[in-house]
Length: 164
Image (tube, rainbow, N blue to C red; front, side):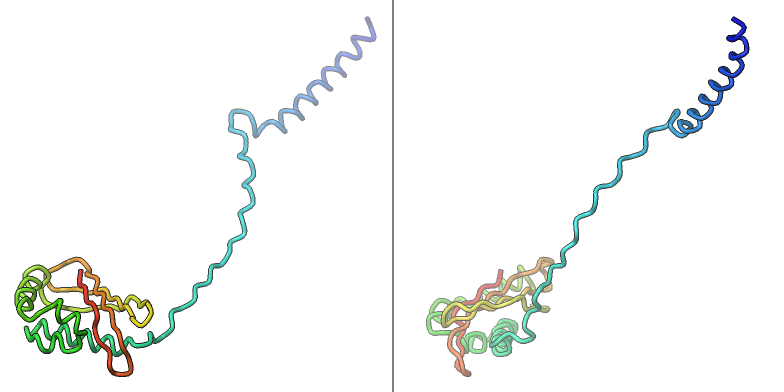
């Protein structure tokens, strides 16, 4: 029994020392959330490269001139100017007798032509389709102008025209 009495203070000191050590390492854990798990590695980013459009679209200058004539003819209500570059089939589909009514309807719903921005073109056999985004004075929405041109070398003809 005497051995236990002498070793009791040593045991008590050892127990206190162990408790103090273990409490100091657990100090950050008591009453707090465990630390979040490490973030997974981020995937490597890949760079996407876009090919810029060619600076000039073949035939665009002539197509712009054709469209300018059409829009000017509508503005002035001159059928000859409006249709002077139409193909024979388009002249039959857009006769002079309905031209004035179409000009009035367009003026009432969309107003006057304000501006346009070229969107692109498509080649379909011997025809080229040109597309513009256009603004008119009364219509707050963008309208799409699609014009189909056939022929070439200064002899271009408008085969189709849609403004929607």
